[in-house]
Amino acid sequence: MVETHNLMTNINQSLGMDSDPPFHETYKTLFAVTKPLNNDWLAAVMAVEELELPSIDLTWLSLESPEKERCKNDIARAANEWGFFQVVNHGISRDVLEKMRDEQVKVFKQPFQHKCREDKFMNVSAGSYRWGTPTATCLRQLSWSEAFHIPMTDISSLGDTSIFSSSSLHQFATEVASLAQKLAEILAEKSGKKSTFFQENSLPSTCYLRLNRYPPCPIPLFGLMPHTDSDFLTVLYQDQVGGLQLVKDGKWVAVKPNPEALFINIGDLFQAWSNDCYKSVQHCAVTNPTKERFSVAYFFCPSYDTVIESCSGDKPSVYRRFSFKEYRQQVQEDVQNYGYKIGLPRFLV
Ligand SMILES: C=C1C[C@]23C[C@@]1(O)CC[C@H]2[C@@]12CC[C@H](O)[C@@](C)(C(=O)O1)[C@H]2[C@@H]3C(=O)O
Ligand SMILES: O=C(O)CCC(=O)C(=O)O
Ligand SMILES: [Fe+2]
Image (cartoon, rainbow, N blue to C red; front, side, top):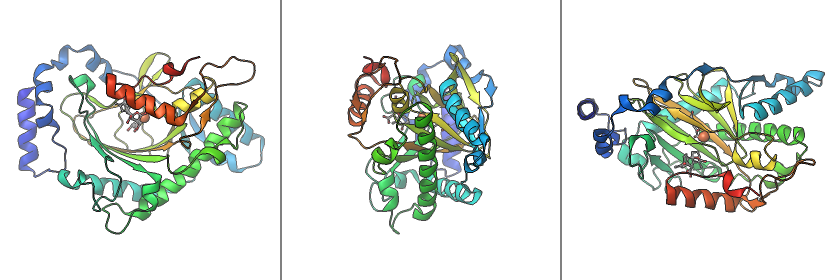
């Protein structure tokens, strides 16, 4: 592993690729102590079956026909059985998606030192650029990726001094936000909850975009550690490379990429609010040995003081009442204290 590390460092330096975060240098001791081929988890990560997620054609939603109701039912069923699905004919044009991707590629190509700057150059809140896992004590705990967390409020105020082109991000974020809202309302209606809840409680200030880049990695690692999302739902726009995996019926499966689709997953808040009707499933990203991979996630969140009441019909509440603020704080505290998120089990009745 030490040789691989040296080789990669030399290649990167000779090609002048100083946009990559210094993964090899920073984690060289972890590379030195891990024997990848003997690790079951590495083998498991690589040897999973590739599946196509349930695909839902949103064209039907704009037609007043029996198919509209069938489409809504398909969305609810996928959220219940998989917690994940893909949508096609989602109404976001190829042009908007391509501009977003071009922007993302351009921003990550900036020299590493620039990406770390927290001034007008990036013009996003401090701490929005992250890479690797500072607390990792073995390769298994390392996320081999870099990311920008951009709150929606920052997107609307990006100025000309920022490296981000505000129009590409703004247009993408606005359209994805309205898609998220539409899907959330359908899911609320189908689980017997109030569908106006999201108009009342979702504020752009808490929603955010996460721009992910997964550099190629010589050995199989997590690009993003297994986790569930802490929001209501997430819309993911990913490229063709593949690497997203999720748990289905207790087994890790790989998601087949689809350039025509956006990928939707249920977050913890929806699982709690729907009283376990919809599933917030564990997912992760794995690295590719030769190709870099890009994805953008939009996290649909309510305002911090929104109270999540877990109830549906006659079924007793699975979770106690909690506010989004309380949930976020608990997740942050757990990540800090234990290095991982505990999530919903903390809020069981
Ligand atoms: C170390 C961690 C930070 C994170 C929770 C986790 O245990 C693993 C994944 C991280 C992630 C990725 C998606 C979302 O941005 C996030 C808020 C989430 O729910 O899982 C973050 C968590 C975080 O930043 O606190
Ligand atoms: O990049 C991916 O495929 C997954 C990203 C993700 O899960 C996240 O950003 O929360
Ligand atoms: Fe996620």
